[in-house]
Image (cartoon, rainbow, N blue to C red; front, side):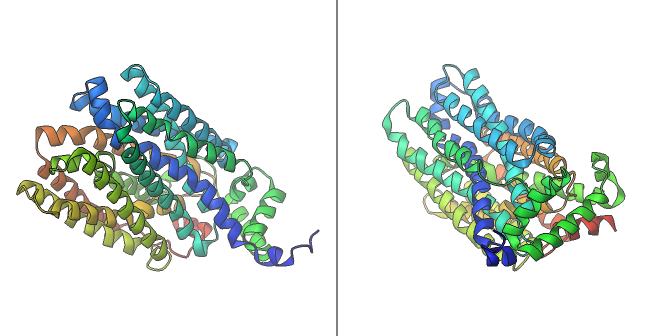
Length: 451
Protein backbone atom coordinates (compact mmCIF):
# COMPACT_ATOMS: atom_id res chain seq x y z
CA UNK A 1 0.00 0.00 0.00
CA UNK A 2 2.88 2.37 0.73
CA UNK A 3 4.11 2.12 -2.87
CA UNK A 4 0.68 2.55 -4.44
CA UNK A 5 1.03 6.32 -4.70
CA UNK A 6 4.80 7.04 -4.55
CA UNK A 7 4.51 10.58 -5.95
CA UNK A 8 1.89 11.48 -3.37
CA UNK A 9 4.10 10.13 -0.58
CA UNK A 10 7.16 12.01 -1.85
CA UNK A 11 5.60 15.31 -2.88
CA UNK A 12 2.14 15.48 -1.35
CA UNK A 13 -0.85 16.97 -3.12
CA UNK A 14 -1.39 20.68 -3.55
CA UNK A 15 -4.83 19.86 -4.93
CA UNK A 16 -5.68 18.19 -1.62
CA UNK A 17 -4.47 21.21 0.36
CA UNK A 18 -6.56 23.54 -1.78
CA UNK A 19 -9.60 21.25 -1.50
CA UNK A 20 -9.68 21.11 2.29
CA UNK A 21 -8.85 24.84 2.48
CA UNK A 22 -11.80 25.63 0.20
CA UNK A 23 -14.11 23.46 2.32
CA UNK A 24 -12.98 25.24 5.51
CA UNK A 25 -13.42 28.57 3.73
CA UNK A 26 -17.13 27.83 3.17
CA UNK A 27 -17.36 29.01 6.77
CA UNK A 28 -16.23 32.36 5.38
CA UNK A 29 -19.05 32.30 2.80
CA UNK A 30 -21.54 31.87 5.64
CA UNK A 31 -19.77 34.56 7.67
CA UNK A 32 -20.19 37.01 4.79
CA UNK A 33 -23.70 35.89 3.85
CA UNK A 34 -25.06 35.95 7.39
CA UNK A 35 -23.69 39.39 8.23
CA UNK A 36 -24.51 41.06 4.87
CA UNK A 37 -27.98 39.69 4.09
CA UNK A 38 -29.35 42.28 6.53
CA UNK A 39 -28.36 45.05 4.08
CA UNK A 40 -31.27 44.36 1.73
CA UNK A 41 -33.69 43.34 4.46
CA UNK A 42 -33.26 46.21 6.91
CA UNK A 43 -35.55 48.63 5.08
CA UNK A 44 -38.39 46.10 5.18
CA UNK A 45 -37.62 45.19 8.79
CA UNK A 46 -37.87 48.88 9.71
CA UNK A 47 -41.38 48.96 8.28
CA UNK A 48 -42.47 45.57 9.63
CA UNK A 49 -41.24 46.18 13.20
CA UNK A 50 -41.50 50.03 13.17
CA UNK A 51 -37.82 50.54 14.01
CA UNK A 52 -36.25 53.87 14.99
CA UNK A 53 -32.52 54.52 14.45
CA UNK A 54 -31.46 52.88 17.74
CA UNK A 55 -33.60 49.75 17.25
CA UNK A 56 -32.39 49.59 13.65
CA UNK A 57 -28.83 49.52 14.94
CA UNK A 58 -29.75 46.69 17.31
CA UNK A 59 -31.50 44.71 14.56
CA UNK A 60 -28.30 44.90 12.52
CA UNK A 61 -26.02 44.47 15.52
CA UNK A 62 -27.67 41.43 17.15
CA UNK A 63 -25.65 39.05 15.00
CA UNK A 64 -22.49 40.88 16.03
CA UNK A 65 -23.22 40.43 19.74
CA UNK A 66 -23.47 36.71 19.00
CA UNK A 67 -20.14 36.95 17.17
CA UNK A 68 -18.47 38.26 20.33
CA UNK A 69 -19.65 35.27 22.36
CA UNK A 70 -19.00 32.79 19.54
CA UNK A 71 -15.44 33.99 19.13
CA UNK A 72 -14.93 34.07 22.92
CA UNK A 73 -15.66 30.38 23.41
CA UNK A 74 -14.66 28.90 20.04
CA UNK A 75 -10.93 29.15 20.68
CA UNK A 76 -11.07 27.44 24.06
CA UNK A 77 -13.45 24.75 22.76
CA UNK A 78 -11.35 24.16 19.63
CA UNK A 79 -8.20 23.75 21.73
CA UNK A 80 -10.05 21.06 23.67
CA UNK A 81 -12.27 19.32 21.09
CA UNK A 82 -10.51 20.18 17.83
CA UNK A 83 -10.91 22.75 15.07
CA UNK A 84 -13.08 20.48 12.91
CA UNK A 85 -15.64 19.63 15.60
CA UNK A 86 -16.36 23.27 16.45
CA UNK A 87 -16.62 24.17 12.75
CA UNK A 88 -19.27 21.45 12.40
CA UNK A 89 -21.12 22.91 15.38
CA UNK A 90 -20.97 26.37 13.79
CA UNK A 91 -22.60 24.96 10.64
CA UNK A 92 -25.51 23.71 12.74
CA UNK A 93 -25.87 27.18 14.29
CA UNK A 94 -26.01 28.75 10.81
CA UNK A 95 -28.86 26.41 9.81
CA UNK A 96 -30.82 27.14 12.99
CA UNK A 97 -30.35 30.89 12.60
CA UNK A 98 -31.37 30.96 8.93
CA UNK A 99 -34.66 29.26 9.73
CA UNK A 100 -35.27 31.29 12.89
CA UNK A 101 -34.56 34.64 11.21
CA UNK A 102 -37.07 33.84 8.46
CA UNK A 103 -40.06 33.08 10.69
CA UNK A 104 -40.04 35.49 13.68
CA UNK A 105 -43.32 36.90 14.96
CA UNK A 106 -41.67 39.61 17.07
CA UNK A 107 -38.49 41.67 17.01
CA UNK A 108 -37.27 39.76 20.08
CA UNK A 109 -37.55 36.45 18.22
CA UNK A 110 -35.70 37.94 15.26
CA UNK A 111 -32.91 39.28 17.48
CA UNK A 112 -32.59 35.88 19.22
CA UNK A 113 -32.28 34.06 15.88
CA UNK A 114 -29.69 36.54 14.65
CA UNK A 115 -27.76 36.15 17.91
CA UNK A 116 -27.61 32.38 17.32
CA UNK A 117 -26.28 33.03 13.82
CA UNK A 118 -23.71 35.33 15.35
CA UNK A 119 -22.43 32.50 17.52
CA UNK A 120 -21.76 30.56 14.32
CA UNK A 121 -20.17 33.54 12.59
CA UNK A 122 -17.94 34.26 15.58
CA UNK A 123 -16.73 30.67 15.71
CA UNK A 124 -16.18 30.35 11.95
CA UNK A 125 -14.54 33.78 11.68
CA UNK A 126 -11.59 32.67 13.81
CA UNK A 127 -11.55 28.91 13.20
CA UNK A 128 -11.71 28.82 9.40
CA UNK A 129 -8.52 30.91 8.89
CA UNK A 130 -6.85 29.25 11.88
CA UNK A 131 -7.54 25.76 10.52
CA UNK A 132 -6.32 26.74 7.05
CA UNK A 133 -3.13 28.26 8.51
CA UNK A 134 -2.43 25.08 10.47
CA UNK A 135 -2.71 22.76 7.45
CA UNK A 136 -0.94 25.02 4.90
CA UNK A 137 2.72 24.87 3.73
CA UNK A 138 4.49 28.17 4.53
CA UNK A 139 5.11 29.00 0.86
CA UNK A 140 1.40 29.29 0.06
CA UNK A 141 -0.09 29.89 3.51
CA UNK A 142 -0.88 33.55 2.89
CA UNK A 143 -2.71 32.70 -0.32
CA UNK A 144 -4.66 29.86 1.28
CA UNK A 145 -5.67 31.81 4.38
CA UNK A 146 -6.72 34.63 2.07
CA UNK A 147 -9.13 32.14 0.49
CA UNK A 148 -11.16 32.61 3.65
CA UNK A 149 -11.46 36.34 2.99
CA UNK A 150 -12.30 35.57 -0.64
CA UNK A 151 -15.05 33.31 0.69
CA UNK A 152 -16.31 36.03 3.05
CA UNK A 153 -16.54 38.47 0.16
CA UNK A 154 -18.21 35.83 -2.01
CA UNK A 155 -20.77 35.33 0.75
CA UNK A 156 -21.39 39.07 0.94
CA UNK A 157 -21.86 39.26 -2.83
CA UNK A 158 -24.21 36.26 -2.83
CA UNK A 159 -26.26 37.90 -0.07
CA UNK A 160 -26.50 41.15 -2.07
CA UNK A 161 -27.57 39.24 -5.18
CA UNK A 162 -30.17 37.27 -3.20
CA UNK A 163 -31.52 40.51 -1.70
CA UNK A 164 -31.74 42.12 -5.15
CA UNK A 165 -33.47 39.09 -6.70
CA UNK A 166 -35.93 38.58 -3.83
CA UNK A 167 -36.91 42.19 -3.21
CA UNK A 168 -39.76 42.07 -5.73
CA UNK A 169 -41.63 39.03 -4.43
CA UNK A 170 -43.83 40.94 -1.99
CA UNK A 171 -44.19 41.63 1.75
CA UNK A 172 -42.45 38.37 2.73
CA UNK A 173 -39.30 39.20 0.75
CA UNK A 174 -37.17 39.80 3.84
CA UNK A 175 -38.13 36.38 5.23
CA UNK A 176 -36.90 34.66 2.07
CA UNK A 177 -33.68 36.69 2.18
CA UNK A 178 -32.79 35.12 5.53
CA UNK A 179 -34.13 31.66 4.66
CA UNK A 180 -31.87 31.51 1.59
CA UNK A 181 -28.85 31.02 3.88
CA UNK A 182 -30.02 27.50 4.72
CA UNK A 183 -28.61 26.04 1.48
CA UNK A 184 -24.94 27.08 1.89
CA UNK A 185 -25.11 26.15 5.59
CA UNK A 186 -26.21 22.59 4.77
CA UNK A 187 -23.48 22.34 2.10
CA UNK A 188 -20.86 23.46 4.67
CA UNK A 189 -22.02 20.83 7.16
CA UNK A 190 -21.99 18.05 4.55
CA UNK A 191 -18.49 18.78 3.22
CA UNK A 192 -16.89 19.30 6.65
CA UNK A 193 -17.49 15.69 7.69
CA UNK A 194 -14.66 14.08 5.63
CA UNK A 195 -11.97 16.78 6.11
CA UNK A 196 -9.03 15.91 8.42
CA UNK A 197 -8.42 17.48 11.79
CA UNK A 198 -5.60 20.04 12.09
CA UNK A 199 -2.24 18.18 12.24
CA UNK A 200 -0.91 20.60 14.84
CA UNK A 201 -3.92 19.98 17.08
CA UNK A 202 -3.57 16.20 16.63
CA UNK A 203 0.10 16.32 17.65
CA UNK A 204 -0.87 18.22 20.81
CA UNK A 205 -3.31 15.39 21.57
CA UNK A 206 -0.65 12.70 21.03
CA UNK A 207 -2.18 11.51 17.75
CA UNK A 208 1.14 11.48 15.91
CA UNK A 209 0.23 8.74 13.42
CA UNK A 210 -2.87 10.57 12.18
CA UNK A 211 -1.00 13.88 12.06
CA UNK A 212 1.86 12.36 10.05
CA UNK A 213 -0.59 10.85 7.56
CA UNK A 214 -2.27 14.22 7.00
CA UNK A 215 1.03 16.11 6.73
CA UNK A 216 2.34 13.52 4.25
CA UNK A 217 -0.72 13.89 2.07
CA UNK A 218 -0.32 17.67 2.18
CA UNK A 219 3.41 18.04 1.47
CA UNK A 220 5.01 14.63 1.07
CA UNK A 221 7.01 12.44 3.44
CA UNK A 222 10.06 14.71 3.83
CA UNK A 223 7.86 17.76 4.46
CA UNK A 224 5.77 15.78 6.96
CA UNK A 225 8.75 14.56 8.98
CA UNK A 226 10.30 18.03 9.13
CA UNK A 227 6.97 19.63 10.12
CA UNK A 228 6.46 16.99 12.82
CA UNK A 229 9.87 17.77 14.31
CA UNK A 230 9.35 21.55 14.25
CA UNK A 231 5.85 21.35 15.70
CA UNK A 232 6.97 19.05 18.52
CA UNK A 233 9.97 21.26 19.32
CA UNK A 234 7.74 24.31 19.50
CA UNK A 235 5.07 22.62 21.60
CA UNK A 236 7.76 21.45 24.03
CA UNK A 237 8.66 25.11 24.70
CA UNK A 238 5.08 26.12 25.42
CA UNK A 239 3.29 26.08 28.74
CA UNK A 240 -0.17 26.12 27.18
CA UNK A 241 -1.23 28.81 29.65
CA UNK A 242 -2.91 31.94 28.36
CA UNK A 243 -0.59 33.88 30.69
CA UNK A 244 2.17 32.95 28.23
CA UNK A 245 0.81 35.66 25.94
CA UNK A 246 1.86 38.26 28.49
CA UNK A 247 5.49 37.16 28.52
CA UNK A 248 7.83 39.92 27.28
CA UNK A 249 8.24 38.56 23.74
CA UNK A 250 4.62 37.66 23.16
CA UNK A 251 2.94 40.77 24.57
CA UNK A 252 3.69 42.56 21.31
CA UNK A 253 2.10 39.69 19.36
CA UNK A 254 -1.09 40.08 21.40
CA UNK A 255 -1.01 43.86 20.93
CA UNK A 256 -0.64 43.49 17.16
CA UNK A 257 -3.40 40.89 16.89
CA UNK A 258 -5.89 42.87 18.97
CA UNK A 259 -5.02 46.23 17.42
CA UNK A 260 -5.33 44.97 13.84
CA UNK A 261 -8.66 43.34 14.70
CA UNK A 262 -10.01 46.62 16.07
CA UNK A 263 -8.57 48.74 13.26
CA UNK A 264 -10.07 46.47 10.59
CA UNK A 265 -13.50 47.47 11.91
CA UNK A 266 -13.14 51.09 13.04
CA UNK A 267 -11.86 52.04 9.59
CA UNK A 268 -15.50 51.68 8.57
CA UNK A 269 -15.84 48.80 6.11
CA UNK A 270 -19.03 47.42 7.61
CA UNK A 271 -20.78 50.77 7.41
CA UNK A 272 -20.61 50.15 3.65
CA UNK A 273 -21.23 46.40 3.66
CA UNK A 274 -24.20 46.45 6.07
CA UNK A 275 -25.71 49.80 5.09
CA UNK A 276 -24.82 50.08 1.38
CA UNK A 277 -28.45 50.48 0.17
CA UNK A 278 -29.08 53.14 2.84
CA UNK A 279 -25.91 55.06 1.86
CA UNK A 280 -26.90 55.08 -1.81
CA UNK A 281 -30.48 56.10 -0.97
CA UNK A 282 -29.01 59.08 0.93
CA UNK A 283 -27.03 59.83 -2.24
CA UNK A 284 -30.26 60.02 -4.25
CA UNK A 285 -30.67 56.51 -5.71
CA UNK A 286 -34.06 54.75 -5.77
CA UNK A 287 -34.49 51.67 -3.54
CA UNK A 288 -34.08 49.04 -6.28
CA UNK A 289 -31.13 50.96 -7.76
CA UNK A 290 -29.56 51.10 -4.28
CA UNK A 291 -29.75 47.31 -4.00
CA UNK A 292 -28.11 47.03 -7.43
CA UNK A 293 -25.37 49.44 -6.30
CA UNK A 294 -24.81 47.12 -3.32
CA UNK A 295 -24.28 44.24 -5.76
CA UNK A 296 -21.67 46.35 -7.57
CA UNK A 297 -19.96 46.99 -4.22
CA UNK A 298 -19.87 43.21 -3.70
CA UNK A 299 -18.37 42.61 -7.15
CA UNK A 300 -15.60 45.18 -6.57
CA UNK A 301 -14.94 43.66 -3.16
CA UNK A 302 -14.55 40.23 -4.76
CA UNK A 303 -12.30 41.39 -7.61
CA UNK A 304 -9.87 43.23 -5.35
CA UNK A 305 -9.76 40.28 -2.96
CA UNK A 306 -8.51 38.24 -5.92
CA UNK A 307 -5.77 40.86 -6.33
CA UNK A 308 -4.82 40.31 -2.68
CA UNK A 309 -4.68 36.53 -3.20
CA UNK A 310 -2.19 37.10 -6.02
CA UNK A 311 -0.03 39.64 -4.18
CA UNK A 312 0.04 38.57 -0.53
CA UNK A 313 2.86 36.02 -0.87
CA UNK A 314 4.74 38.28 -3.32
CA UNK A 315 4.59 41.79 -1.86
CA UNK A 316 4.04 40.59 1.69
CA UNK A 317 1.53 41.41 4.41
CA UNK A 318 2.94 44.75 5.54
CA UNK A 319 3.16 46.38 2.09
CA UNK A 320 -0.46 45.51 1.31
CA UNK A 321 -1.63 46.89 4.66
CA UNK A 322 0.20 50.19 4.05
CA UNK A 323 -1.08 50.63 0.48
CA UNK A 324 -4.62 49.67 1.44
CA UNK A 325 -4.96 51.81 4.56
CA UNK A 326 -3.66 54.86 2.67
CA UNK A 327 -6.20 54.30 -0.11
CA UNK A 328 -9.04 53.72 2.35
CA UNK A 329 -8.30 56.96 4.18
CA UNK A 330 -8.12 58.97 0.95
CA UNK A 331 -11.34 57.64 -0.56
CA UNK A 332 -13.41 57.86 2.62
CA UNK A 333 -12.21 61.46 3.01
CA UNK A 334 -13.36 62.17 -0.55
CA UNK A 335 -16.67 60.38 0.12
CA UNK A 336 -17.24 62.73 3.04
CA UNK A 337 -16.45 65.70 0.81
CA UNK A 338 -18.92 64.46 -1.82
CA UNK A 339 -21.70 64.27 0.77
CA UNK A 340 -20.69 67.63 2.29
CA UNK A 341 -20.88 69.42 -1.07
CA UNK A 342 -23.98 67.41 -2.10
CA UNK A 343 -22.47 65.95 -5.26
CA UNK A 344 -25.54 63.76 -5.81
CA UNK A 345 -26.01 64.28 -9.54
CA UNK A 346 -22.78 62.66 -10.72
CA UNK A 347 -21.23 59.27 -9.99
CA UNK A 348 -18.68 60.59 -7.49
CA UNK A 349 -20.11 59.06 -4.31
CA UNK A 350 -20.38 55.65 -5.97
CA UNK A 351 -16.83 55.92 -7.38
CA UNK A 352 -15.26 56.94 -4.05
CA UNK A 353 -17.13 54.20 -2.14
CA UNK A 354 -16.05 51.58 -4.68
CA UNK A 355 -12.40 52.72 -4.52
CA UNK A 356 -12.54 52.58 -0.72
CA UNK A 357 -13.97 49.05 -0.86
CA UNK A 358 -11.28 48.01 -3.36
CA UNK A 359 -8.54 49.38 -1.10
CA UNK A 360 -9.96 47.45 1.86
CA UNK A 361 -10.41 44.23 -0.12
CA UNK A 362 -6.76 44.10 -1.19
CA UNK A 363 -5.42 44.86 2.28
CA UNK A 364 -7.22 45.08 5.63
CA UNK A 365 -9.81 42.51 4.59
CA UNK A 366 -7.67 39.43 3.92
CA UNK A 367 -4.34 40.45 5.43
CA UNK A 368 -5.59 41.04 8.98
CA UNK A 369 -6.99 37.50 9.13
CA UNK A 370 -3.73 36.11 7.73
CA UNK A 371 -1.56 37.91 10.30
CA UNK A 372 -3.91 36.98 13.16
CA UNK A 373 -3.74 33.31 12.16
CA UNK A 374 0.09 33.38 12.04
CA UNK A 375 1.45 35.26 15.03
CA UNK A 376 0.35 33.22 18.06
CA UNK A 377 1.98 30.07 19.57
CA UNK A 378 0.44 26.75 18.49
CA UNK A 379 -0.78 25.49 21.85
CA UNK A 380 -2.71 28.65 22.68
CA UNK A 381 -3.35 29.84 19.13
CA UNK A 382 -7.06 29.09 19.40
CA UNK A 383 -7.58 31.01 22.64
CA UNK A 384 -5.28 33.86 21.61
CA UNK A 385 -7.02 34.28 18.29
CA UNK A 386 -10.32 34.23 20.17
CA UNK A 387 -9.19 37.26 22.17
CA UNK A 388 -8.30 39.19 19.02
CA UNK A 389 -11.50 38.11 17.27
CA UNK A 390 -13.64 39.13 20.26
CA UNK A 391 -12.19 42.64 20.04
CA UNK A 392 -12.88 42.60 16.30
CA UNK A 393 -16.56 41.77 16.80
CA UNK A 394 -17.03 44.22 19.67
CA UNK A 395 -15.62 46.93 17.39
CA UNK A 396 -17.81 45.76 14.52
CA UNK A 397 -20.90 45.86 16.75
CA UNK A 398 -20.15 49.38 18.00
CA UNK A 399 -19.55 50.66 14.46
CA UNK A 400 -22.75 49.03 13.17
CA UNK A 401 -24.80 50.28 16.11
CA UNK A 402 -23.56 53.87 15.93
CA UNK A 403 -23.48 54.39 12.14
CA UNK A 404 -27.23 55.13 11.67
CA UNK A 405 -27.17 57.29 14.80
CA UNK A 406 -24.18 59.32 13.58
CA UNK A 407 -25.69 59.77 10.12
CA UNK A 408 -29.13 60.76 11.46
CA UNK A 409 -27.95 63.06 14.25
CA UNK A 410 -24.72 64.55 12.86
CA UNK A 411 -24.12 64.07 9.12
CA UNK A 412 -22.97 61.65 6.44
CA UNK A 413 -19.86 63.71 5.74
CA UNK A 414 -18.65 63.86 9.36
CA UNK A 415 -19.18 60.11 9.73
CA UNK A 416 -17.01 59.33 6.70
CA UNK A 417 -14.32 61.77 7.84
CA UNK A 418 -14.26 60.09 11.26
CA UNK A 419 -13.55 56.70 9.67
CA UNK A 420 -10.97 58.28 7.34
CA UNK A 421 -9.05 59.50 10.40
CA UNK A 422 -8.95 55.93 11.71
CA UNK A 423 -7.41 54.83 8.41
CA UNK A 424 -4.57 57.29 9.06
CA UNK A 425 -4.05 55.76 12.53
CA UNK A 426 -3.95 52.31 10.90
CA UNK A 427 -1.31 53.38 8.38
CA UNK A 428 1.11 54.56 11.06
CA UNK A 429 0.45 51.58 13.34
CA UNK A 430 1.35 49.19 10.52
CA UNK A 431 4.35 51.27 9.48
CA UNK A 432 5.85 51.42 12.97
CA UNK A 433 4.84 48.16 14.69
CA UNK A 434 3.56 45.34 12.45
CA UNK A 435 6.31 42.87 11.35
CA UNK A 436 6.49 41.02 8.04
CA UNK A 437 5.63 37.29 8.23
CA UNK A 438 5.79 36.40 4.53
CA UNK A 439 7.50 33.08 3.78
CA UNK A 440 8.07 32.05 7.41
CA UNK A 441 6.75 28.85 8.95
CA UNK A 442 4.44 29.22 11.94
CA UNK A 443 7.21 27.78 14.10
CA UNK A 444 9.75 30.35 12.81
CA UNK A 445 7.32 33.19 13.56
CA UNK A 446 6.76 31.85 17.06
CA UNK A 447 10.49 31.45 17.77
CA UNK A 448 10.95 35.06 16.67
CA UNK A 449 8.72 36.24 19.53
CA UNK A 450 10.42 33.95 22.07
CA UNK A 451 14.02 34.99 21.27
